[in-house]
Image 1: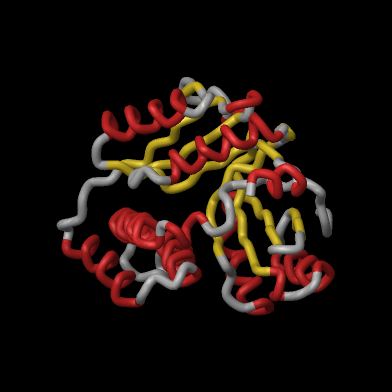
Image 2: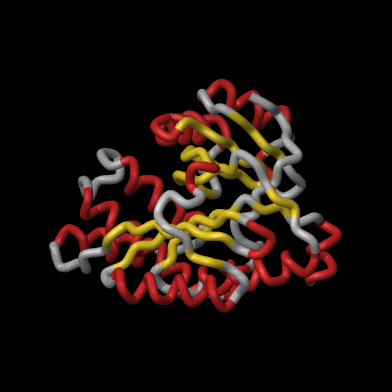
Length: 247
């Protein structure tokens, strides 16, 4: 377990959800509804629902919106959303995993394929790139939660596997099946996390130049703009210098 790592996996650009607040609320509510429908409507009895609610709270989703999403599942009148994963390649050979919740696989597949093809990428077959990632739990805290040493000690005590601290945040990695318990342990010592979810951690990363980075970020934006897409993961790194040039 390392206290600090130079590895930086960019999942989305800061501020993207701020620009699409309504869409972000909708996606978070969809995850809450699916979690409540698949398990108990009580977050204390349903780890996935608890994580979904915490994620919604971290994005300032109103309590009424959260409760409506749970009630929708409890009444049995929620849409039948299906979890779907797409895998492909972006500019510079970057590996990308797209997670979606959809009530129409054909629509979502078409939209995802179009986003890839219009932005320098190619949609691959299932399993095309996921073998290069590890399925893990990811818990994030803002930098203000404490210095790297404090976070490291709390994470170690809670049973986490790795910690990566940067100027913006602390990323705490856990075993997939330990996410809920580690999140509970960290909450006791650090307070509520900014987010806690299952994630895809790349085993190796690809550093992009300015041209490929610009195209890739357009691809990520196009994917995230789709209502059915929940999360986009990639094995790419973009230096601070390149990001500054891209604005």
